[in-house]
Length: 298
Image (cartoon, rainbow, N blue to C red; front, side):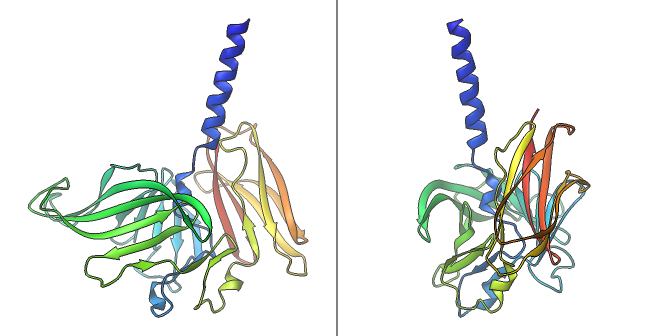
């Protein structure tokens, strides 16, 4: 009887560890209204997510400008955390969000034959540090140009770019070898919360539309989970909808569709009648929305 009890405790510990495992998608915050300001003297470096959509394969498409650049979305994030730039034009695999220290991958191959000039990325280090007063996890990624048919990074590869991404913030620092000085994140608005110093923020406060959406808990879940979101104290009630979609972008359930007063609200989602897999929950108002991913494991 004692041995059986010990096994139960061990399995519970393993399940708890799985639930608490960091979400790699947090290294690339993807909610509409998120804003990053890198240099007040170079506004072209600043980014705002203007809209998003979910593809049939569950990928999230993000647009940073309107009208659109590159005849399509600026980024695509697939269901395993691969981030592609210009996915509908000449896609390059900019990030593998789940990659640990020592992992490398091909960003883009410029030759038609599959060999020759290419860009390769390499995660040099993962570590914890502080940004805007918050302690979080960082990944330092090196980017190399490869020549003469090389398919791996060698001594002859040319390092040309370094990026630092942080959990909960995204790209916080980068340096191109041709630049005189690295570029650092000065401030941002992530899921409605402001960090750092924002100088060129004209109108960006409105873009956050005074709402924030938290990660569901527990996640992964079986069969139910709690979704929490906050409506800022804007003085009036607002029409809100909270809906759940499957990986093909089909609506599964409307959890909420009514005006709400300012404050923090919680809604329970029951997946008893669903199969295991990835699902998305979307908080929407006035044509703007926040999207997060959750995992049902039975």
